[in-house]
Length: 481
Image 1: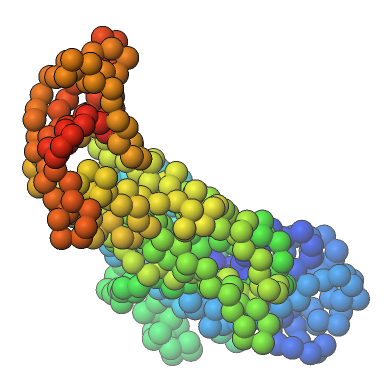
Image 2: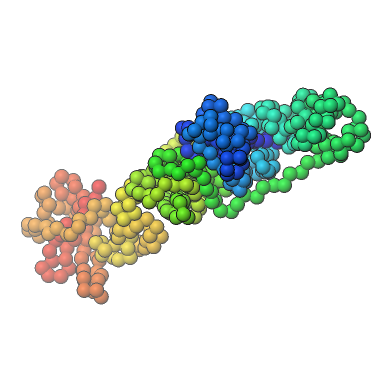
């Protein structure tokens, strides 16, 4: 087996900082109040001398404009679980090690992603788009991968022999969590895992307990180390707390891109696309603004979904600044993998047309863009209707009939007749017909017509009809392409 560990040392900070582009110093405190200490801070804060472990009061003395937010462990847990759900895009075997690690069993995925190096690049690039900077390491055992990741070592070990060599150089504090135990080991001259392995096991067990020895054996693969599998949620709901209230739509789109990347990873693992989703903008005093998006075709393209949201936000005025941005996928549909054929893909052309429709509806409003659907009526002028997106399912299945022109006139146009021959830029020659249509007697709009396909001297194809009732007038009803 081969395990890949994602260790998130800055998770308390990234839970907030990834929501907006950080323009100024930002820090996360353990609690409220001037006596609280900082857990993490970003690069602009470090440049001002702010460091984790400082009190809030001391940090503000160094940076008066420091934006401090209180740690939210529930939000961190939710973030870790969403990362785990996203990771199913790369492997079906994912596990969480709280509070800040996600484990992937990737042995069976190497062939799908062209080897370990390519998989590293793919995961690293994708996780960066989500707004995280984890330490990544791989090893034959899950605990060894975790230890290397905690140490910030980008280790890639495939074989057990190399594993023991690499583990020997690992500082002992990454395995032993207790400061007292670390101090005791240092008093024995033990600073690395290799030093620990050179000590007598019985004496080490008496002083520090069997747990340490068991951890060492699990890291080396001597003991089994089963990890509980993470079961991804059946629905996607994600929220993104803002480090400070946000009013600008571009800043909201920055955070929305993060959520959409998570959504698309979750959709890829499920083999589906989203048809309907909701954006929830939370304001002060528990007030919220909801913005629904309905797509013409299922999608898991983050950029396309972001463009549709951008168009919607351009038409919406939010009542107040946003404290939290949330995303909920309401309706999903299967999404087939794309063919790698070099021939034109009709499905891709259909999807492109649907995307144009979605952006127009987002920009102009749902009522401004309509679809055409068939209506069960033999009368040509009543055989179609305009409908909103979502009503297409009720389109009627029309009975088999003769040819129909693409351009149907809004109302039939009378034709001049010379020697019983209808004229339109010259005499018309009948090519096909008649097709008799008699309908509408029950609603007072009775029609009785014989339709023909005809052409004129300019070779234009026309759809004409002759009234069956006197005076048997001829009319032009449409043009063929």
